[in-house]
Image 1 (cartoon, one colour):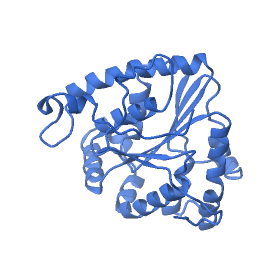
Image 2 (cartoon, rainbow, N blue to C red):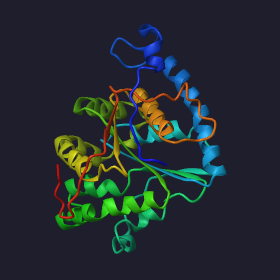
Image 3 (cartoon, helix red, strand yellow):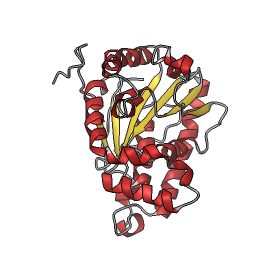
Image 4 (cartoon, rainbow, N blue to C red):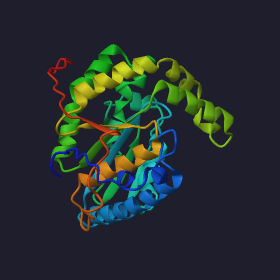
Length: 282
């Protein structure tokens, strides 16, 4: 795979159909439109997986983002119709005592895809860039050491042929508050809530600072960060799939349909420069 690039286009269904059939009054997309567009993308994802299996590729997609931004539901969007024998989602629990004594990346790298496999990380080693730093689950020295190593680790993955994508789902503080309230009121979603969610909401601005630091240090040419405005989950999901498909030359791709992404929703961070001392070079 060549280096990732972002292709903005207006040749998207949401701009080619009547706005009244696409958008609600609040600007979010209608469910009927979303389901129709999503199904078209599912056909392409099935083609992609067949190509991954046939050519023994390894595809790894990391999902990060604000709490309640929709990481799990976006992974579900990708995996709905994929063969589960060759596609899996990884959501690691907190490290046990043995893992705490290992190299930080070790337990994550055990999960990287085998030949012919697609793996989605629901959070990743970037816990050390955000939540661990905010709540004191790592020391400042460990946080800085993470940034000494992460670009080299990711460059080795890419150099070894892993198709590697990093997606960040971003939402406003207001959206986060509304989604937490929705989980409180919905017994089917209450399991998603924890005490840490409320603490994280209170530290929203600290997360913003660390998010931008992460983009600056680890949004590199070989492993860029692709940021999605996920205030409308459905638009973020569609554009996440579009971005992935547009950056892989799989067999049978419908080039007339996979044309790029929406500039209103997607932003690429690939200019990061790291000097080895945890300093960002403009």
